[in-house]
Length: 194
Image (cartoon, rainbow, N blue to C red; front, side):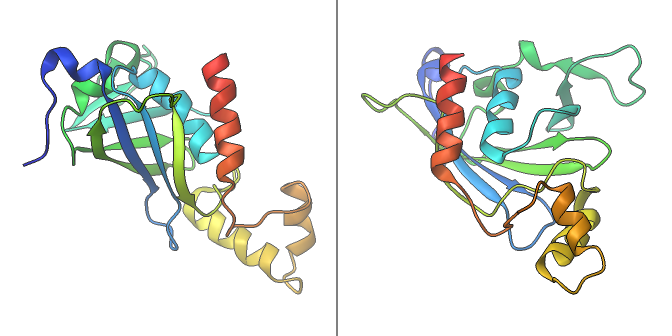
């Protein structure tokens, strides 16, 4: 049975989360730790840094059929609960809980979030912190899953007719197989200080 911290202690615990970008193979994932009392809005800002996104698009969480994000009168979809009023420890109170994070409604990047562990804070450790990951995050606005597959095919093959154009578009170089753990933790350090 997964451990569930007592209600009074939930906000003082550390959540170890694994976030995986759905659909793409090989998998693009990150393992990171955050405080249990983070609002989903604050968690969103951590996810952006951990994954390598630039926070240029709308996002939402889907937790047990309920949508969390930034409510808007212009939104025509299901009702949205404010992510600023929802805390991680309340929407995912136990280990092995899963929920979805969607980023960029046009490209529709869906991420699976898994609560791997709920632990006591480690003395001297600053949070949030990224522990591990695999592969680079797709570039923004590349056209979702099919566009990313086409992009990687183009940049990986110098004979591809769009090779030079795609490399120029991405800024000259992109290695889909690289994950920069130190770079992510530097971004998280700036987040903690900000």
